[in-house]
Amino acid sequence: MSSITISQELSDQPQKSAQGHESGSNLDDTLSHDERTESWTDRMRRIRRSATCQLIILGFLFFLGPGMFCAMNGLGGGGLKDSGPANTANVAVYATFAVVGFVSGPVVNKIGFRASLAMGGVGYSLYASSLLSYKLDSNSGFLISAGILSGIFSSLLWTSQGAMLISYTLPESRGRYISLVWGLFNLGAGLGSLLVFVLSVDSHEGGISVAMFVVFISLMFCCALGAVLICSPEKVLASNGGNGAPVAGNTWASAFRGLAYCLRTHTRIVTLFPMFFVSNFYYAYIFNDMNLRVFNIRTRALNNALFWMMEIPGSFILGVLLDQKSLARSARARLGFCLVLTLTVAIWAGGYVWQRRYSLATTSSPSFTTVDLSDSEYAGPVVLFMCYGFYDAVWQTFILWYAALTYSYMFPYLPYMLRLLGAIGDGSKVSAEFAGFYKGIQAAGAAVAFRTNMLQNESLTDLIVSWSMLLAALVFAGPVILFRIKH
Image 1 (cartoon, one colour):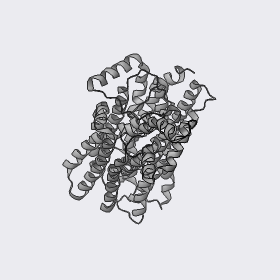
Image 2 (tube, rainbow, N blue to C red):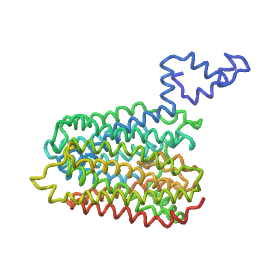
Image 3 (cartoon, helix red, strand yellow):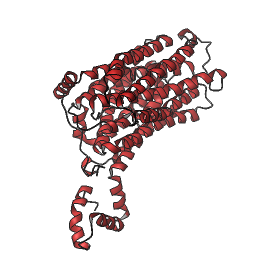
Image 4 (cartoon, rainbow, N blue to C red):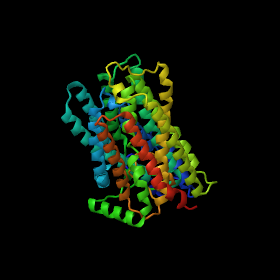
């Protein structure tokens, strides 16, 4: 059994049944007999080739790779005392990602899921290694080159993730599988931050230690090593009864033709462009301006852990609300829009009030003492960090839900809130190339944000810019969401 694929096993079962069982036995009886007689090794191999097991493995790879990347970035400055080096690396990562996302599909087709995920793990470990190198000897060249490679490799990793989630699941079960992968990814970011907190609980320094960098690099590289457990698509028995299929290939020419078709025939998607652009834009403010400048390392680690942990309930709560079939689609859209708008005003207004206490002159003064979790003034910002994490999940979730209504299509390259793909139908003729364009807009927004953050603007200015862009994006999309969506 170990020398043939699962699909071949199923096709051979009727013959086996006719030879070794009574004529009245069915396929289920034969499979049950095979499962009783197969060896432990064959059983483990069969389980590993199942779609469910492959997606669980994928979730743990994202726990180790992207999860640890977010844990490092969320500390502010990538774990360093200064945000400049990490900003440089992030600009390289996101700018490259914005370009490569257009044509990552055919590359994944050529090299396969296993190699693509392994390269993603290598890319993230290179990113962390470049920050450690800069901490030790200020190696700027390695910082930029590692950022570029990480942008290329991580685009392949995210494309493979989307392709596996689409190929190995049915629409009615896709949401559960995507929730699993998404939850493990955020759990990795949260636990990675808690690990920093535990190891630096007695530290009041501005950055993480060399040993902690080594831990992050090792965990990220385990993502690359763990990719060996990923099977080729033709050997995986998907939940739809067939074998997994690789993501559709495309070229630069087909990507832009598909994009032109989307923009020409589905003009409503233009209203989402500002929401796409700003969806990662405010990370630079939260992680660098707020977390890095004001708090010491152990408090930054705790803030980061709470931020990522709150993503999980945020996504779940809004997802349940938007999936309420007792409400008309238009009612759910309006309810979701009003909730997002309310949270945008309330949470960022609270952040504005808090941020006014800490100007750039204050936090950069030699006499300034960073806030510690034991300080009485920490009660307010810890709640604020939790609210920001919850808000981030709500914002990303609502974007994808609205995109699902607009297109009724599966987006293979989306890095955030892929859980909502279960609500997106399979019958639309909209080109898949648009998904890469979505990722390009989002990555471009992140690249711009980290580049402007290098200018060392006032933290309050960065907050106002992020808050204004969020409100402007909602105003731009509001008329369509409130008045054009039908039941």
